[in-house]
Length: 323
Image 1 (tube, rainbow, N blue to C red):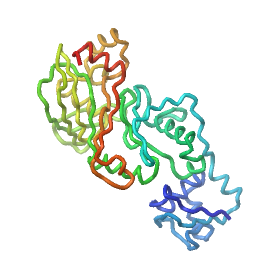
Image 2: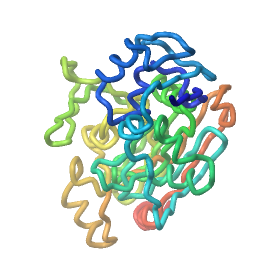
Image 3: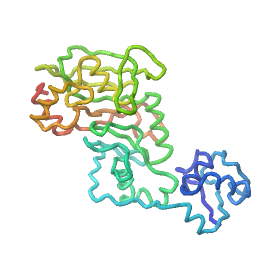
């Protein structure tokens, strides 16, 4: 028999979901069969799997140790040799990093090393996380940036912090600002809206001004910081947060982002590529403004977090618009 005492990062979830994480190699049918036969109990009682777990709950597995180990599978995370995680904010619950161009926010393939893997590696090496805990909880990111967009990525060290951060993004109580260099001289601040349709096969979006069943409504604000020599350094307030929203929305407004071959101007991009060996769009998640709050996000209550611009970004801005 094995007893598991539910911790903070395992609470507030359905019992069957916890079991599926703890023994991730077992079929779901196995859990329900064992619960019916009282070989798996919660606080000494028979369960259905729909129960919500609380801190301190006792889970007992009346199973052979060999069976448990077989269904647990491998939980060890490989050590990252060169972990160059750029941490801009950290407290007991939250980690915010400055993601470089070229790095994934989350892995797309099995062997990818993304921000998530670097964060887990950092927490393991710093003793804030143990391999055993990874059976039922993995720290994760709450916002994703395109591979070739740099800037702020937020992560929760605890389940409750993940939930609170995700809610802040969903309800837009946290304000997200980006910096980008665009083609054309923008003279005035503007609010633009429309509808975004995603083509999954092409990993590309279309902007339209008419609603359709497959379209998501989008809202974007921008403000010119410097406008000169046929280019503008913009600060963009991302009100909604859809795939490629800033890139496609600005392009549809006649101001494509420099370096963006998917939605931008190829001839202009080629000039920057030849001059600076630019391989990505000039788009950076620059600032996050947090609301007054409590709970796991209390350390960020009313605060603003910044991510410094990449060196190449700064050089191109200085030489293009003199900023």
